[in-house]
Image (tube, rainbow, N blue to C red; front, side, top):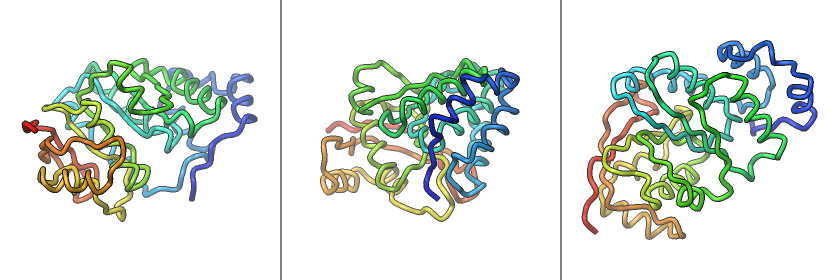
Length: 241
């Protein structure tokens, strides 16, 4: 089932009538309510359990800054869901949610901002980049964790290569993909954990402006949900080119 974005009428009914104001600062109830909007793609129920499984690792490693790329894929639900989980640990953090500007209408963007504000999770920061690479170059955004919200096999790798290209990934950065159905087995982790010669060959084969960094070395640090995603990896080295 393809994603169905809310229309202007939904924005008007929720924001202008303030029909959800009674849920302000109650993220648990808000999440239960907005799930009824029927604007989220049908997905493997295990996906949100993936986010739950990140909490013990988060509590142990205490990353100060987390980047969730591809938040538009479930209209920010995962962003609020994850922010709500992490907030309950009482560990300080900032969660940056990046939404592709052109995937949402103006009213959609306003609605996303409204829902995040309504959640009361002040640790969430919303961004709407028109071009991911240009945005990250122009906006200083250091991050300890990078989570790629599954879009498609091709886009997941493209996002990772972009993040590598702008040097957002450094030794010590944790990288993982989330919300990927169990049946989706593709080359994301094969690329991520591949040998430098494999990554260089793959980057040359894919081509494009965003070449990625073949000389970044990652190691798997946790397979938090049985044999499926999210596999948490850490960048452990940067080889001399």
